[in-house]
Image: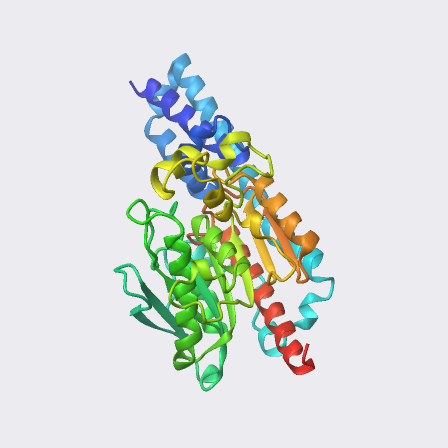
Length: 419
C-alpha cells in the first residue's frame, strides 16, 4: 500500500511542480483547477519540498518495490523542479525594477522625494514570508463598513496611518477593488499585503465592496466602483486623504473594474444620479485584469470572450445579443490619450488571464496615452499570486510603492508648474 501511495503522491507532487514551472493553459476549461495547484506551489516551493520530504520519510518502507521506486523518483524530480521555482522567484524583484525603468525612465528613483525614497523596502521581510496570511496592522487605524451607497454591498473600509509623522497632512489615497470573478470576494480579503505596506508609509487606504453577479449584472459593479470614487472625492479629506490623488487598484475582476473606471471618468452612463461628480483618478494599478471580452485583440479566439461564464453569470445575455455591452465592458475599447498613468502587472504563468491579452492592452494604451504606461510580466507568477505574503508578492508591493511615489511626485510637480 505504501508503495502505491508513493507513486500516487509522487505523481501529484511532480504535476504540481510542473504547473509552477510551465503555463498549462490548454485546454482553457481546466484553468481554474490548474491555477489552484500552481498558485500555492509556485509561491511556497520550500514549504512543498519540506512537506514532500516528510511524506517520503513516512512512506519509506514502500520504496522497496518497483512502483515505490518510480514514486520516489517522481518526488526527486519534484524537488529539483521546486528548487528551480525558487530561483525563478528571485527574478521578480530585478524584473520589476527593469519594468519601472522601461516605463518611467532610468532615473525614476531620483524623482521620489527623500522622505519616501529613504523608506523604500529593498528586500522582503522574513517574518512575513513565514506567515502567508499575517498582515501587520502596526501603525494603521481601520474604520470599517462606511456606507457609500444604498445597496447592501455598498460599504468600504478606510485605513489611516497613525504615525505622528503623517498627522495633519493630506495624503494620497490607494483605492482597492477586490476580485472574485465579479461574483464573490470581500473588501477584507484582498489587497492586504499592499495596504499593510503602503498605509504606514504615508497613504490612506480604502477597500470597497460592490454588488455581485448574478444578482446584479454588469454594469452594476462598475457603477458601484465609480460611486465609491465619488464617496472618496467627497469624504476622504475627513480621514486625512487627498481627493485629487487617488490611485485605484485591484486584481483580476478588481483589476478589470479599476482599469475600466480609470479609463471612463465622468461617463454619465456609469454615474446615474451622480453625473456631476468628477471621478478622475491620479493613476491605476491593474493586477492581471481581463481587458478584452469581444476578442478584438484576437489572442485566444472565442475563449478570450469568457462568453459562457459571462453570459450566464455577469452579463444579461450572450455576446451576440449584447455586443455593445460586451465592448463597453472591455477596457481595451476605452484606451485613450487622456488615460491616467497605468501600471499593468501580469503573471507569466497565469492560466485565467493570459499574458498575451494583458500585454496587448498595455501596448495599445502605451501607443496613445499621454501618461506613462508600465507593463510588468512577473516571472513564474500565477493568477492571484499577490493575495498572500510571498517573495513575488513582496516584490509586487514594492513595485507598486515606487510607481505610486513617482506618479505622486510628478502630479505634485505639475500642480506647481500649472500644467
